[in-house]
Image 1 (cartoon, rainbow, N blue to C red):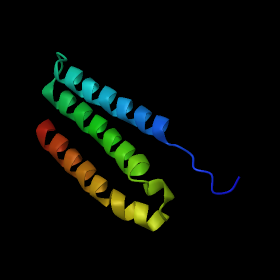
Image 2: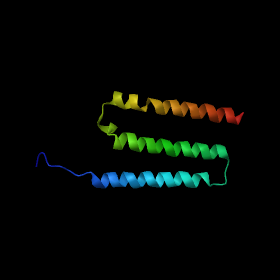
Image 3: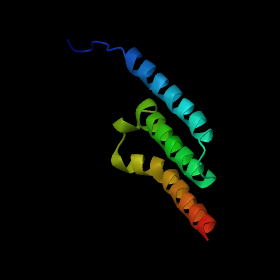
Image 4: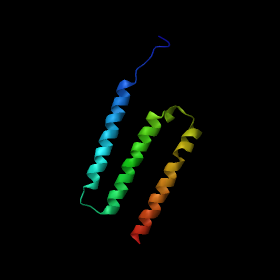
Length: 92
């Protein structure tokens, strides 16, 4: 049937629980007895995964043209560059 509404309720519930699980993982990472630089790197990676989930799936960027997806991802490249610079400076 054309025009039939398809509920996305279970998708959004799954995204909610995935986001909650990643947040709990971030809290657990802080408690790990490892170097603080490794903790920061892990937190940044988990945060980038959460940004991807929210941007690509919940803000519906997957339905946008490639050039608009690239524009939306530009701040992620800046964050990745900043992380590399900070890690490199800490290694000195």
